[in-house]
View (cartoon, rainbow over the protein chains, first blue to last red):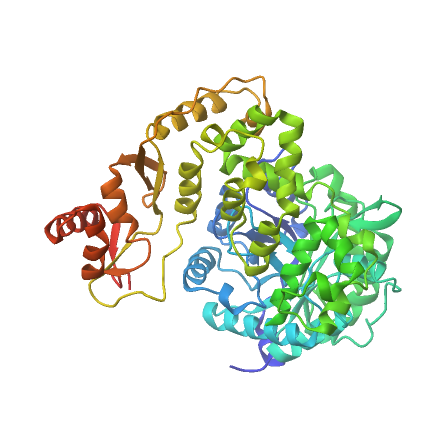
Length: 294
Length: 285
C-alpha cells in the first residue's frame, strides 16, 4: 500500500457536511437533514453517519446512501487500542454496513467506547490514555481496520473531562498518525475542551502538529458548567460554539493542505438554529483548500 | 497492554467517588491488584480531583439500565426494603468489591450486577426466598441475551457438545417461571415504564413461588426473543454439563450422577442438537 501522502491525494473533497446518529432525525427537535440539503445544499454536501453495528443504519442514512450521495462512516463502538476488540463478527458487520454506505472513509473517536465486552450497558466514551504505548497500540488497530475494510481510517481526538497520561493530546495523535501512516479527523471543539481542561492556551502544541495529516475537522458547541467549584465544558453538540473552537478553526483551516471535509455536529438542533454556525464555517473556510470547489 | 488495565481503573474512578478518594490518598494501595505500573499510578492523580465527578448521573443512568435487566429481583428488593433504602442499596453496587473486581477484569456489567444481587451484601435484611425467587431466571436471561460463545480450557475436540450461544440453563424454585411471568406482567403494565414500576413500592407484586423443590429452566435466546421452558432437574443437570464444551463420554459420566444412561444422553443430545439448543463444537466454523 502506498504511503499516506500519496493516498490522501485520491481521497475525494467532500466539503461541508452534517453528522447523524441512529434515530437522530426522528428525535424531537432533531435536525432534518433533507431539509438542510434542500435549503442549504452547500452545508449538506455529505452525511457523516454515526454507526453502532448493533443498531445498524436508520431510515435516513439508508435513504441518503441509496441516493448515491457522499458519506463517511463514523464508528461509535470500537476501542482501537485493544486488538481483541476488532473481532471477526464485528468486522463482518462493519464491512456489511460500509458496503451499503460506500463511505469516502471511516473515522471516529479514538478512545474507549466501551468497557468490558461491547454491548448494552457497557457503552461510554473516554479519551485514550495519553501514553506512548497506547499510541502504538492504537496505530496497530487503525492499520488493522484499514486493511480489513479497505477504507482509510481517520482517528478523531475524543472529548473528555479527565485526561490521563504524560503526553499532550496533539503529541499523542501525531505519534498515532505517524505510526499508522494515517490521516486524522481533528475535532477542534474537543481540542478546545482538552486545552482548557489541561490549563493550556487554545493553541498549545498546534504548531508542532503535522497538519498535513488533517483530512477532516469537526466543529460543535459546548456548554460551560461548574461542579463543586470546578469549571468544565460539556461536549453538548449545541449551536453555542466556544470562542476557542472558532479561533482554532480560523487558525487551522488555511494551514491544513489536505483538508477534505468539515462537519458541524449539530444533529440535535432544529434547522433554524444551525444556520449561523454553518454560515460562519463556510466563511472561515474561504481561505482554505476546501473553498476551492471542483 | 497495561493501558487497557489503566482504562479500567479510570472507569472505576468515574463511577465511584470513594475509590477516587482512595486512589488520591495512596494510588499504590488503591490499585495494588491492577496490572498498572508506578508511572501510570502517578498519572491518575494529576488531574483536579473534582474532574472525576463532573457527571453526577453516571451511576443513576447505569442503574436504570440494570433495573431493566433485573426488574423482578429489583422490584422485590424495593418492596422488602422500601424505595429509599433499596435505592441506596442498589446504588451501592457501584462501590462494591464486585463492581470494582469485575470492571477491572473486563466483565459484563449486567452479569456482574446479577452476581452482586445474589450476594448477602445486596439482600441483607430481606427474606431471600422472596427477593431472590426469580433471580436465577433473570440472570439466565442476561446471559442468554449476551449470547457469548462458550469456550473452555477443557474443551474437547471432535464430537464435543456445548450449549448454543444465547442458551442458558438455570435452576430455580419450582413454579418460578410462572411467578416471574406474573411479576413481569404486572411491572410492564405500569403507565410510567419499567424502571418506574420497579421503584414504585405502592405497586403490589404477585407472590413468589413457594416450594422446596427446584426446577430446571431452559432460557432460549438463540433465535432472537428470549423464551423460558421449565425442564426436569435431571434433564437440567445433563444440559448444565454442556455449559462448556464437553465430549460425549465426559457428558455421560456427568449425567450418570442423575441416573441417566448413555442411551438417555444420546437421545437428549440428538433431540436438543436438532432444536439448535446444543451445538457440535466446530459446527459453526
